[in-house]
Image (cartoon, rainbow, N blue to C red; front, side, top):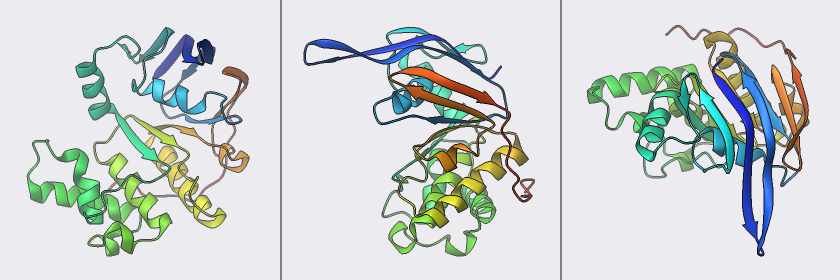
Length: 238
């Protein structure tokens, strides 16, 4: 089991009273799952995703990544965990505006042992994967929204993570570009076996999941497995 969440609770203080953002959440994620998390605004979707990354401290309960316990780890261990095992894809792309596409993809390798030539090669291989190698020297402002999100996905893959955490990755895209990005994520999931956990408000995006979690007022309202969608083949061997 890649991820295991046991009786997870997160309580915030608001106007002098406790608000339960996550209420006794439990589920397990296998390697290679594509998990979609849906629910209305305020249902706890983003809180859950940030908890899985160790970016917020939960109130009680346990989160395991393989044998590593996330919920009570110290900052150094959490930082190492994220560097080695997690890639992030955000709604606003989070690209550095004065860096080229190649330089943005290379960012997670900044303190790695690889030479600059090796870093550039790895970045360009991933830009080729997301069909953007011809835009490798372009700045974010010179790219469309869909192209910027593809650069962000390439950056998330550069460290070969076990887990991609995606927070509303199509939230700033029109329907056509949304479909393009979702197909790319699904192809990566299917052809590499990389696990993806994606928060989305879109019922259409949720259909891409092999495991679908719907939250309501901080609780799991429904949990479904094994929904599959047909997508074309993508060669991830390069």
